Image (cartoon, rainbow, N blue to C red; front, side):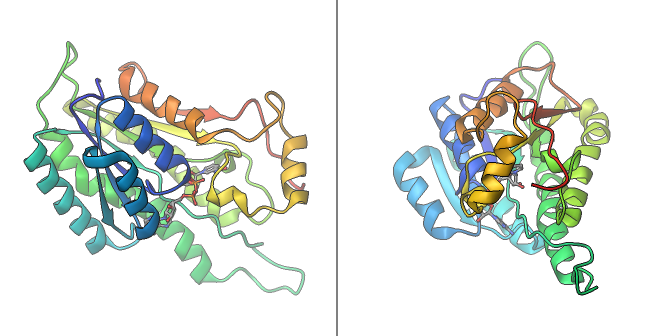
Length: 262
Ligand SMILES: NC(=O)c1ccc[n+]([C@@H]2O[C@H](COP(=O)([O-])OP(=O)(O)OC[C@H]3O[C@@H](n4cnc5c(N)ncnc54)[C@H](O)[C@@H]3O)[C@@H](O)[C@H]2O)c1
């Protein structure tokens, strides 16, 4: 599907991987609706990229906040005439915690709920609420394609490290729902792709200790470095443009396989 002339919704679009996608979509001639809790960074990005972008404050763990963001997106689309082409739910949080610590204290249910409500429920709810508009888009191209959903899992979906039980549960679930979602949406000409990155440069990884960073680098094959947000955005672009990518979880990790401990 062509990016040019269409609108793409990017949650977590104010920072890191989502922000790189927003830049890339705009560079390819698309419009990007940025949904994020970080109003300052969202407004700054819109200031840089101009009228091909719009920012809407949104907490993806709140279904009413998503409903407001969807309404704002549809009204922007009505004014630009650029139909919805894709949904990229990239908002996510880490919040590590051992399931049971040395003092025999189990991880709090609040922290589990928080990670699941943003990474898993927030992803599903945003997709769910935008799908009616995506399915109503005019079919395009020889295959009658209407759009694409590109979700973000993680290497932790496959090799979660110590302290990543909740995060791995959320990302494993995102990976698992890719194929059934693609099957459900095939009749509408909507594809579903999930990308599972290893360590990428972003706010999420900027605060890592040197010890953790060095340990992660030892686990890397080639290239032995963190991925760049632009490399993630480039695979998102390919996932939008290449109609044969569907129902698949793509690891973007330079052959890194995370060890248990660093
Ligand atoms: N950076 C990595 O190494 C890495 C690796 C694997 C997966 N991921 C995943 O990539 C995605 C993007 O992460 P990133 O690395 O760019 O991190 P980031 O912290 O730079 O960006 C995440 C964005 O999500 C927003 N956000 C957080 N909670 C939100 C909520 N409730 N509602 C709306 N927005 C919210 C934040 O404000 C932030 O702008 C996440 O899903 C993350 O789990 C990142």
